[in-house]
Every structure is written in structure tokens, then in C-alpha cells.
Image (cartoon, rainbow over all chains, first blue to last red; front, side):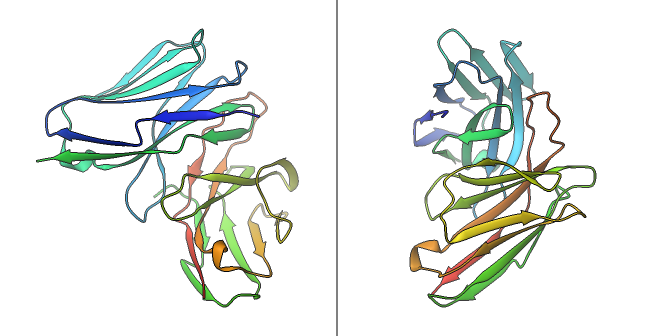
Length: 110
Length: 115
């Protein structure tokens, strides 16, 4: 089955700096890559996703890049704010099953 | 609000007991997924139903079972509960088409505590 690895496990950044989270996947047939943000005790919320026919997608301060050849994808958050502090999960999907990375705890220091 | 509802919000029970968690998907969604999230752990996929039929199975224990009813709501049954079953259980739903894209929306979760 699909195996998704996510790095780093924790990330501390100064407010206003950028944060980058990287994920690799094993199944070359995976074609959908969402990112979820989860605040403490709350549900995961989809923040951005990318399909395999696209190399990059941007939504305001958030961007995702995909390298299908290398089987890795990354989340970039620019101009970080305190409300960006949360756990971020990447995932990869082929068909109907999502395989999640282990998560990255992001802390934005004021 | 994702449109996915889960009940109850919290559940406290004892070892050896059996509980049922309930999920109602977003209007129009045919697929329901169940996930387990233990403390400081990621999201472990348990099982998926599509329009009443089991479609995919993950790391679901034999003590756990699920079903999806004709009105598309789903129930996750956990029996012979152990301390290690204490976790947040999330339900997610998606349209569930055969196109391969799988945008899932999560419910608020049920926090299960086994004492």
C-alpha cells in the first residue's frame, strides 16, 4: 500500500517567516495530494490540494508543489502568523483511500 | 462547519464494554470514512463505505465493525474495549465518484475514553 513520510515532525518559526513541510510517497499511481490543518482537539480541515497533472498551486499565503518524478510534494506557508500554529498533515491518494503522513507540529513564535 | 456530523461528542466507558459511534455525511456525499487518532498520533484509516457497501479497509481491528445505512449515515461499533482504544474517532465524507479524486471533509470527532 501507499506509504507517506512527512518531515519535519516539529517546526518552530518566527512570525513573518516562511514554513516548509515536505512529504514523500511510495505509490507512483497516487494522483491526489491534499494538506490538512488540525488545531488542538478539532477536526482536520482541508487547506489546499493538488492533482497529479499540476506542478504547483497557490492560495494566498499557502502554496503546494508536486514533483511526480521524485514522488515528493511540499507545503509552503509564507508570512506566518500566530493562527498558523497547528498540526499539518499531508496525504496521498490513489482512488478512494487517503494515506496520511505522521504530521508536523508548527509553532509560530510572536 | 464541514457539514459532517458525529455523535456523541464524548464517550466514557469501561474496559470490555461495547460502544457505537454515529456519523452523518454531508448532503450528497455517498462515501463515508472512519479514522482513529490516538494521542500524539497521526490519522489511521480504518474503513470506507460507499453507498452502503464496504469499499476499502485499513488497520481496523476485528473487534471493530462498521456499516452504512440506506440513508447513508454510518455507525462504527467498537467492542471488547481496551484502554488502548481511547482515541479521537473521526468520520469523513466525500462525493465518492470513480474519478479518483478524493476530497474528504471531516466531522468534529468523537472522543472515546476507556477507563
